[in-house]
Length: 208
Ligand code: FES
Ligand code: FES
Image 1 (cartoon, helix red, strand yellow):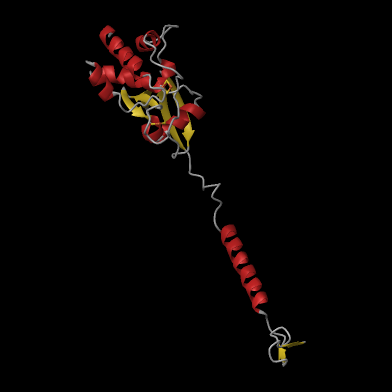
Image 2 (tube, protein in one colour):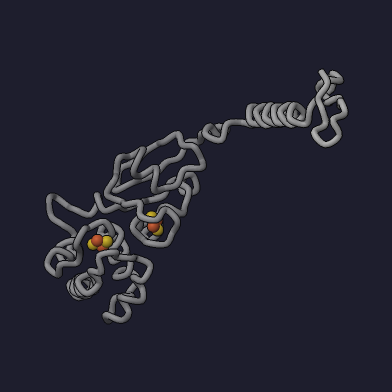
């Protein structure tokens, strides 16, 4: 088909009339090819939602005096194993990156943030969590002190604060309020219940 040039009245041939490709059709074709290439690239990649599985390994953990033999993905944190595999949800997940202390437990008697360590690294370890503190229906002295000194509001940080407080006392770092504040500084309380927390740790340290 011939078109007419509006300025010269000459008949002109378009690319389409010559049986060639118009700029529009070239762009459409190029876009389609690019989309196809992108689609096949995505299809060729392993799905991001389904990472390759790691072979599981046998891990023994002694948690609150009870021995567990677990087949674990070596990439799982101790926190996730406690909460999701052993259903010990008293240990809280706050930041999941080592910044808040909500996940503090005792590992072989030492304080540790359980979100930053892999369960598989601790075969045979002794772990104490907030669930293991009560003895024959009696609260641990630091739990009682938290109640007496109003060391909590929402309570989300409290299990980590108490486990950290037990470690702080055992380490001999609870001699003065300043010392307690310093050695408990890794445990954040969003409610700001710090005066009660420090008083509770100081009180339990004296009784110990
Ligand atoms: Fe582990 Fe915050 S949840 S430090
Ligand atoms: Fe609410 Fe500490 S009591 S975060």
